[in-house]
Image (tube, rainbow, N blue to C red):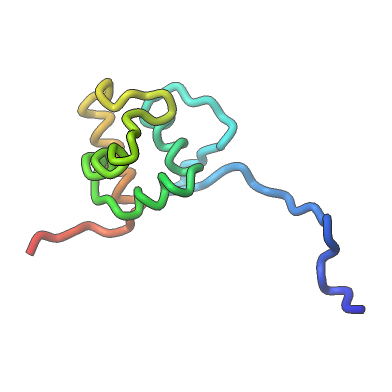
Length: 104
């Protein structure tokens, strides 16, 4: 019998936080700022996170998820976002996809 194989039922500790750009977001925390509530929802949902990897900015992201019938995340309606909020979400989208598209 090989003793290096973990036993069935062995508990693995799961970390409920994600660290990006030295900012830690916890899946169980309650955030007040609308931008952080949206970011938390995206980071802890695989489908939403995958779409974020494909979009260059917040506007593209909203277009993509609106095709699924999503018009708010984390209880935040997209129509209530300020221009400053949108700028922060644009920066977040760039950090998620890791590239800046150049127009040719």
